[in-house]
Length: 57
Image (cartoon, rainbow, N blue to C red; front, side, top):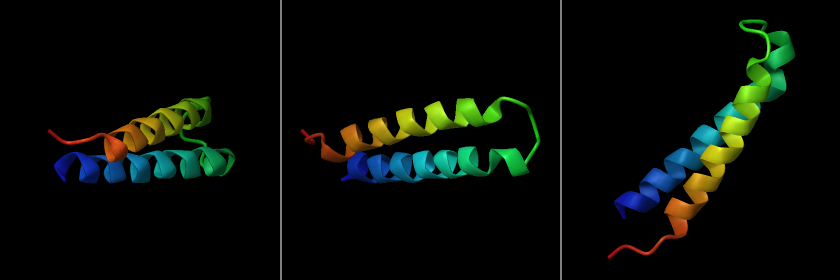
């Protein structure tokens, strides 16, 4: 159950990063951060799905 909760947390974190990459032009903190947050969000989402559906021992 703990891995499933970590997976849900990673999916939510990935969604947050993807949302930030969408509003990046309106938040000019660091130039080029939108691309990093886009790929980071995709990777976090994929890791979250793997953790969510992985069987516990």
